Image (cartoon, rainbow, N blue to C red):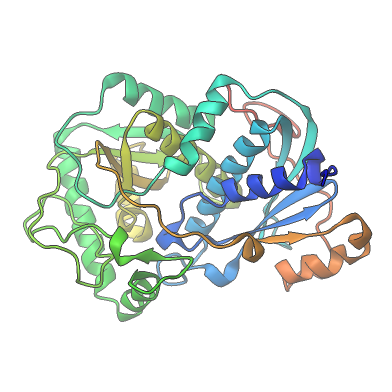
Length: 370
């Protein structure tokens, strides 16, 4: 059976592949807080507020970062099928859950770099296990920084020994503060450490071993106490602090796009990464990280990067949970479907405010540069 053109000029098979690739993005506790609304002429990315972690992420900043990572994968996947995406990032006070609108900007063959990053998407993992005590090559560090810059962000790689010691202490203090909160622990337990099969969250098998109490760096327990004990983590992981110009919905989305490009670049170079989220979730710790690194830009993500061993992928939600479609015969139902995505929205999304990038004043063809 032949396939007809679908949204953005793709076939239906291509469309489903694009949404699948977008859904492989990282998210806090693997909540996968996104939904995709497809119409014949555009694709909308919405935040799924029912998956927000209200204790760890009360203002939804990490939720929007996750959606930004999904948006970057979406851009790559469209370029992979020859579609030049025009992206408007449109967080709006009236429709705060509408993250971005993607339209077709013509055709463009995928560059070698796009193909390389696209191949890395299904290989990328959050690796919570110990890394080898081996330095990350200078060339790889350069490429990681360059990846962040390409998306309008900065990646500070912390090498100063005194700053690293202070960051380690801050991470421990922030961790202790969070796990002393019963509501935080209950939320963490609800999303991690499960043994039964499910399509979201962090299963116990994906959690790392429990480090000794005197370890230099403290990591969250994603196993509910069932992880192996006594395993030594690397003493000197490469610590990366990702930041953008400021805070706010648009900046959060940009940080997510930059994060995913950095993580995929790390994957291309055979590197692993995981997160020290407590350093950006506890306000006092986050402000101190800012002072220690950029000085002005608030940190969005703190990660450890190094040489890890292969780990299994975390589960993913099925497409029928994250995809809402308007077929041509359903055009009159756009308002109803928008209401399904955002119960507070009385109208479908109106004119978008464009997302300038690299000096652009209007819609930008979100092509990862060669």
